[in-house]
Length: 196
Length: 215
Image (cartoon, rainbow over all chains, first blue to last red):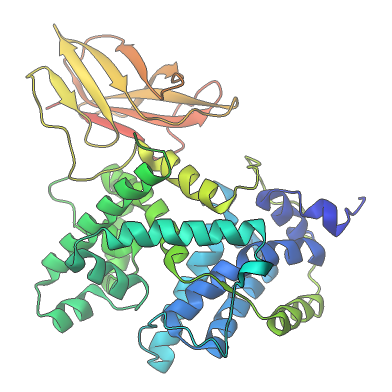
């Protein structure tokens, strides 16, 4: 098989790249990594608040993608979603191992590299735009719904832990999660033009 | 969805206790309604990471990562079965795409009130079933246009019987389609719409994007 140059690879869709990764092409993996490592690291750092642990989580996630691409099923979602789910699950595992607690998304500029304006690529500009959009949708939720969603997703807390911490019945916490996610769906759908 | 555990949202958020999560996964195997709710809300979960402050991985970490990969050559195992080759989507694009796929499948407490006795709103998806004299017309809305190798398929489920395939259809530019439901609705308990390969399927291969329940 003729192996494409890296520049050619960057024009391929993720699913096409994954087929090459499956054949053991490290350059295809490199493109996948460059495409999704930033958002994966941002999520891991948001969850654990420590650069070294966030890097460890991201490395584990991408290495698992390299080692066992058979586990990636294109019919069940995008590569990006798959990577982010692996990162999320591994971050929760890390919480439980190390009792790291919820990340606060407070940046220590000395240890992480944010995206300086002069160096932003097109993708990075779009990431900024997405961040604003999703944050705006989260900010639009009633505080009690946003709180349970963030504690669960970014904090890695179970609904019973959240209920105990907030002094609420478990059913109330589940109900707030459902309402909050439903409203987020509507807000994001409207913002992206999917909904009228 | 009375009788179903209210666990789709906490399941997606990873907030169920391990025993609850296992029980909910078992429940999902037999409950199309909850499967649809999970499928509908999943794009929202996929969007949540975007709310984190965008960071860039350190160059040193990138080098370390790629060294580790090259140090671990893998055996070729052939191509993965890529059924649909999706073009690379920009972040705003993937967000819209994920939501669009789920747009008709959302199960939320925003249902349109029943304004007329013979108009039945879908329990899943944005659709209305107009029933008159035992016959029905299904109006679906906000369904995304499908690629050429896919089609929407209507399914009828007689009470106590298995689903049977019905009409194949496409939606217009506004994501809308009006279809007459073949036959008498007298013994039909549910109508479903799924996305299927071109030419249709004999049994659904994807979660329903529209579910209409006739009571």
